[in-house]
Image (cartoon, rainbow, N blue to C red; front, side, top):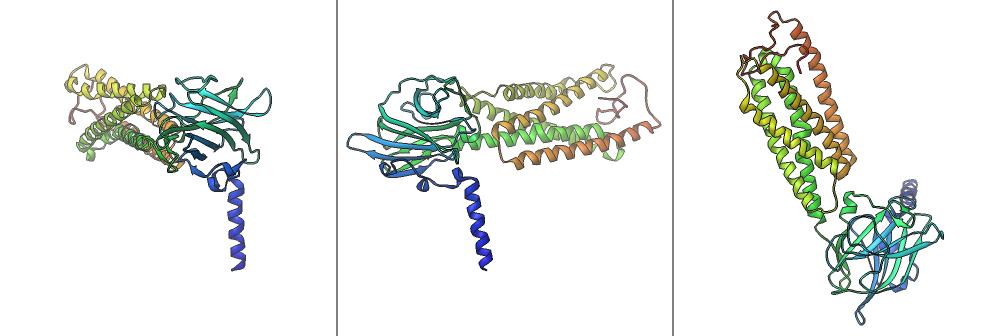
Length: 394
C-alpha cells in the first residue's frame, strides 16, 4: 500500500512539473506584490487568469493578468472594451520581450480595426504598468492600475496570446476556438467573469461542421460509389438507382443547411475570413445545385447526346466528392476539434476508398466478361434510365 501511495505522489508531481502553466490555478500563482490583489479568476480560455482588487472610492483597480504566449517569443494581452464585446474597440495592454533592450515591456494599444496593431494611447487612464516573464514555465504577467471606465459590475474584457513579435509589433494571433472565445463580461464588484456569445457560437460552428462532414464528406462519396459500382450487379437493379438518388438528394439538402450556417457564422465574424474554406463552400453549393437540377434536362435514354450528358454528370459528381473532402479538412483545421474526430474521419475515408478499390476490380471483371458488351458511342439506358458501366467510363 505504501508503494502505491508513493507512485501516486510521484505521478501527480510529474504532471505539475510537465505543465505548470495549465495545472496551477490562479489562487496558487505567485505574483509580485500579491497583497495588492484581493481576488482572482481563472479565465475560460487560453489558460489565462486575472488577479485584481477594486477600489470603489475612486473607481480604480489593480490588475495582474497571467498567460502563456502561444509560442516562445510571443506576447500576451488583456483589454477592456468600453464600446463592444469583441476585439475591435478594445483598449489593450500587450506585454512582450523588447528585442532592442531584451527586457519585458508592456504597451498600450487602441484596437480600432482588424489588422496590424500600432502602439497608441487608450481611452482610460492607466499607470504603474510592468511586465514579467517566468523563464521556467514560459508564463508572462501584466501588472497595471487602471481608472475603471463605466460600471465596474459590467465590463467587457478581452484577453489574448500571440506567437511572435516583429520589429516591436505583435504579430497576429491564432484563430482557434480558444482565441475566438477569449472574451467575457467582468464583474469587479462580484468577482466573476461570464463568457459572452462564444459558447453559442462554438455550438453553431460544431453544427456547421457536423452537417458538412455528413453531406459533402460522407454521403456524396457513398452515393457515387453506389452509382458507379452496384449497377453492374443484376441483383442490385433497380435498388441501386433509388439508393443513389436518395443519398445524393439527402446529401444536398443537408449540405445546403451546413452552407447556410456557414454564411451566418461568416456574417457574425467581421474581420475573420477563411477565404479558401469559404470559396470552396460556395463552389460546392453552386456545382451541386447545377448537378441536382441537371436531372430536369436529362436526355432520353436513346438520345445521342445522352453519352455527353453522362460525361458531364460523372465529372461534376467526382468534382463534388474531391472538393467536399478537401473542404472538410479545411474545416477541421479551422474548428480544431479533438484530434480523434479528424483521425476518425481519415479512417472512414480510407475505408470508403478501400471499398471503392475492391469494387473497381470486381466491376472490371464483370464488365470484361459480359457477353453483350456494346460498342455504340451512346449506349441506350435500360435500367431506370441508366446504362451498364463501360470500361473506362467516368
